[in-house]
Image (cartoon, rainbow, N blue to C red; front, top):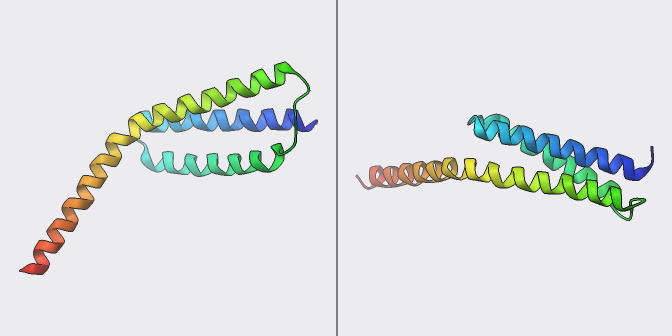
Length: 107
């Protein structure tokens, strides 16, 4: 398989994982989201390694690559929309717990 085909397949895998991440975020499955994020990081590391210095054969390759990248970015933006309220709740909880701990230490 030519390198550029492997690269497109890898981008396709990344796009599929980002879609799974979006589903997990929509469903509030935060543990699954974290697992999938780790998978995405591994795929991205693979892309960085195999893509270096590899050019596609034509405009169709570049167009497909751009489509896949846009999908990943769109999924990421929507995942963030779902995750940010959860992160805010966790931060509030952590701050509240710290305040309670400090209050108990004073007494």
